[in-house]
Structures are given as C-alpha cells and as structure tokens.
Image (tube, rainbow, N blue to C red; front, side):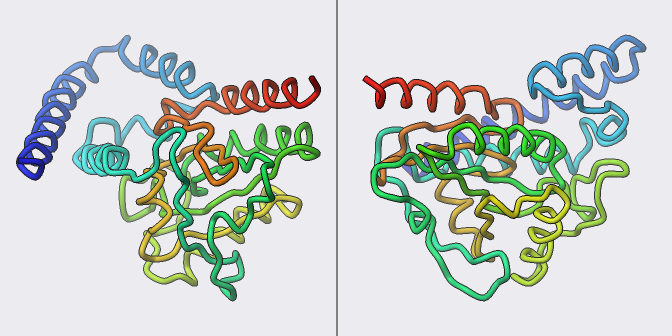
Amino acid sequence: MYFELQVFQKFLIYSSLILLFTVGRMLKILPFFKSMISIAMCKMTDTSLPTEIYWDSLFTWKMLQNVYYCLLADMGKKVKLNNKAYNSPIVSIDGQRCQRILDFAKGSRPLVLNFGSSTCPVFMQMLKRYQLLMKEFQEMADFAVIYIEEAHPVDGWAFKDNSDIPKHRTLDERCKAAQKMAKSLDLCSCTVAVDSMLNAANIAYGAVPIRLYIVQSNKIAYEGGAGPMNYRMQEVKEWLQRFRARQSV
C-alpha cells in the first residue's frame, strides 16, 4: 500500500509539472511574461538573478527533469525537524579524509549546514551573506558548507554563461569543483566538505539543489525549505539571534 501511494504521488507530481510547463511554454511568447518572471524570481530567491542566464532554458525538457528530480529528493529526505540528524559520510575538500557531518558539531553549539554547488547562481550569491553570518555568530555557532552534485552542470539543465562544470563522474572532479569555489570566494575561514559519490548527505537531507539546516545536540533544530525558492538565509539569522538571546538570559 505504501509503495502504491509513492507511485501515485510521483505520477501526480510529474503530471502536474507537465501541465505547468506546457502552460509556461505558451506564456513565454507573451512580451510581458519575461519581466514578470524576472521580478518574481528575484523576489522569491532574494537575489539579483539576471533573467538572461536562465530564460532560454526555461520550461525545457531538461529543466523539467531537473525540477522533478529535486522534488523527489525533497520528498524522500530522511531528516525531519526536531528529529535526529543523519551522520552522513562526507569527504574533506582535498579528497584525502573520510569524515561525517556531525564531526563538525561541537557539544551543544548550533551547527549551520549549507548545502549547494557553484553552478547554482543563487547559492553563490548567498554564500557572501553566509560569510557575514559566520562573522556575526562565530562565537556561539559553527558553520560548514557541504558541496553536493551540481545544480546546473553544462551537460544538464545548464544556464547561459554560468559555468563549464559537467556532472561529477569521480570524487576528484567533485573535490576540484569545491576547491575552485572555495578559492573564488575566499572560504578559507569556513569548513568546506564534499558529499560522497553515493550522494549520501544529499539523499539524507534532501539537499539538492541548495538547502540550509541547523543541527544542535545531534538533532535538526532548523529545517530550511528546498531551494532556490525556499532557501532563506534570513531565517537562519533570526534563529541564531533567538538562540543568542536565550543564552544571554
């Protein structure tokens, strides 16, 4: 019965996407639709995302496949708010050491986890805000970036003039992509690790394409929504502010 329900849910999601994309492709020919999408996208992602980078690929077959995959990842994630955090296996950014996510947790200090990849322009813009959060709350919380599979690889749902990074075929490719990102944004003061090629962390946390979590005392204290639309850096900041206020009482 559970299996049949899952199949029905997947069918419903896929059918809804096909309907949505069909309508979207028809609306795309209207002259005012582009400006509407641009405004909506910037507002929902809280970024200044250039419409040109995604417009040509909007409502295409590759986009549909990508969105469907991300929705299934969210639906199948293992972690839940206030429940135990999964201690998923990950790898150091140099590819030399096997680690686990909770290795970065220190006692009862909050651990802010930021999942993403450099081919996601929203993630790259928000990393600058993430660095500001680190500076503001580093005395009371720990921070880590977990590099996962590419959101917009050149051989997938690619954005225009965005990146030449393909889907990772080896751990070395994933580590090099993470190293390139860390170097470009000067993330030397931030812990950066890489998901395994089994995508264990991604699967457990429903992280693709981008997602935020806060782990405290090995439990999920904050569960961010699936990105990019529900990727809310401000919510993380507000959670940390409330935590700091409680600590000072």
